[in-house]
Length: 138
Image 1 (cartoon, rainbow, N blue to C red):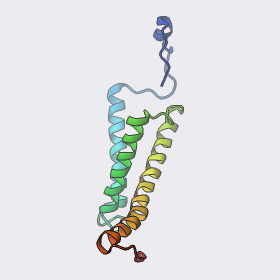
Image 2: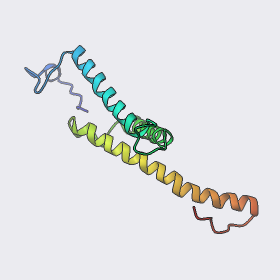
Image 3: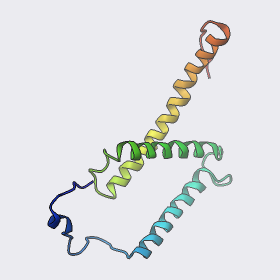
């Protein structure tokens, strides 16, 4: 995020020509549409499709990671304003955000399944039996 300047002349200065590959707005929109759909289709075929998927657990794990990834990205974006990532330039910013989102989505799932399931079993044993007995091995 760029700092806001009270100097009007500084705000109106624009570079002469943008650096790098430039597309008009329609071509850029079509390119983003195609790239997102190709990547989505590849991920769908790799993880969810019943015939081609690497794992035959279709579609439960994919939906779970998609849910937690979306939740993590929305949390980072809305609550922190992408504060840790805005120091980087694109495409590094997008790559680091994606890696962090995937890692945190996996960590959330691992935390919920391993830690919370263990303590929930102890809590249920205490509530039903009045004592805490060793948890059953999974």
